[in-house]
Length: 117
Image (tube, rainbow, N blue to C red; front, side, top):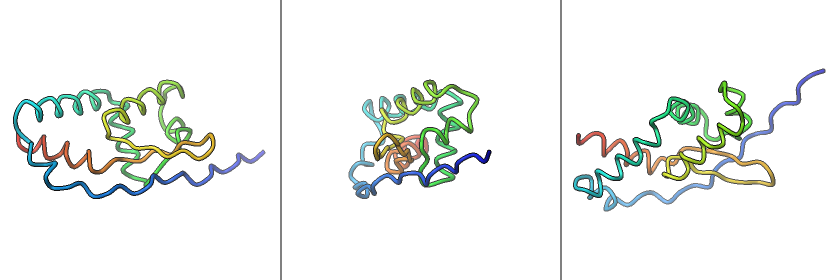
C-alpha cells in the first residue's frame, strides 16, 4: 500500500518588519540576558537541527519534523515549545495541524547580539 502524501504545510502569517529601534539595545544587561535566553534555547542539538530544517523550507508541520529526527513526537513538541517560547519559531494552526516556521526577526536579533561579542 502506498503511503499517503503529507499535505502541504501551513504557512505562518507574515510578520511586520522589525523596527530598527529594537536593535539599539544590543549592549548592556538587558542585551546580555536576551542573548543568554536565546543561546539557552539553542543549547540542544535537536533544537539546532529543527532551526536548520525550518530554514530549508518555509514551513513544516510537526509530523514532518518528527519524521526527520530520531526522537519521539512528544520530545519534538517540547523542543518546538521551547523554541517558540523564546520567539525563534512561530506557528500557525489549521484544525489539528500546526505549521512551524522561523521567526526571522528574532533570528536577526540573535545574530546581531552574537556579532558584537
